[in-house]
Length: 251
Image (cartoon, rainbow, N blue to C red):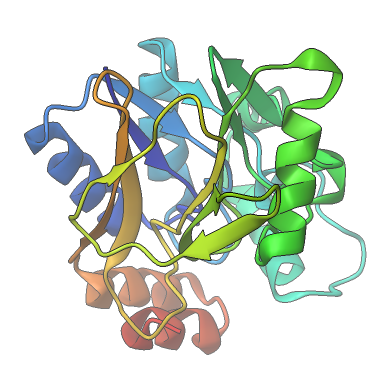
């Protein structure tokens, strides 16, 4: 079975549609959205409505930290994300906010564990961005006899695969877009699948991944999209200019 793994859409409907079209052409059978449907971008409502349709059809959908903030906006604007939380709250009707509020932080699917941030204290929204944090994530996923050997993570806006070599410590691997990477089930892996709606590596193309459970491999993808239109939506909404310019620069 082919799974489309998408995360950190950040209210970017242009990027989401481009990734969805690309995944459909690849023969994807199941969808998983690993959180942060909203935040930063100018189109939270169409993004949430699209993902709600997928959820109604059986997709796995998780809650991210920006989804949580949109449901209960912070009183103080202490971060860039908090700056848009109150605006996003106003854009979403009650049924959409309820949908975001009741999403789980993680979901176990056989040998797979899906989580927005780290499986290690997921409510703390920890980043899996180095070998040590990846090991903590994997250790939490396999605690108490759990057999979740493949952990898929969002939140960090980067595409990295952490694999278990001859020793116990995980090691990082930078995948090449479009090139399948074998993931044998008897080995343990942690994959950060990147950001659909806000790449930050100097490349404007959207990020997502496809996991083929039957063949035991993952393919990381980069997909061009109309980032100019996504930036225009941010400016039209009156959100900070930085959110628009970063899409145009992929930073």
